Image (cartoon, rainbow, N blue to C red; front, side, top):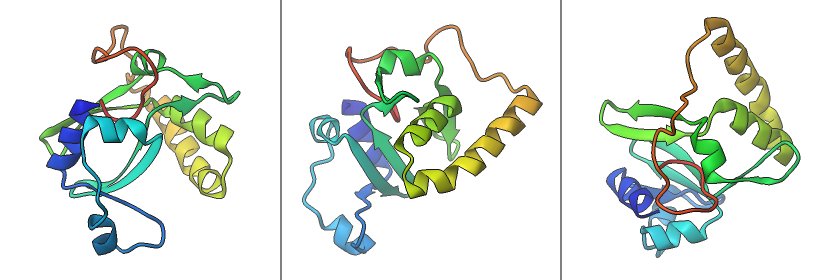
Length: 146
């Protein structure tokens, strides 16, 4: 989580809070460090690179919590703005999580995510790695950017 805090600080992150303006959100007293971020089960951020959701864990299709070690082996490494390396959950895991949550915003996102999945499968793009892309800092749940 220590790296999460550093990455968020480097991206000038501020919490996105429903009902608050960016200026009001930026004024919230929040220490951007690993301890604070680790206590937020789900947090939404506005950054200089775009909006970002950070989840401590993610539910599977049956609602069980999927552990970091299970997700990281399927995760995808990306480079944002040609300078920031991030690892994000595999699209299968994201879709499963949204199917389980089944909130209106998840239902709204699912068709686009499923279309993206279908396109990726048509392109047969390699997405899986036999070795984890990174090693966990600690055992236990975690998800999002590592």
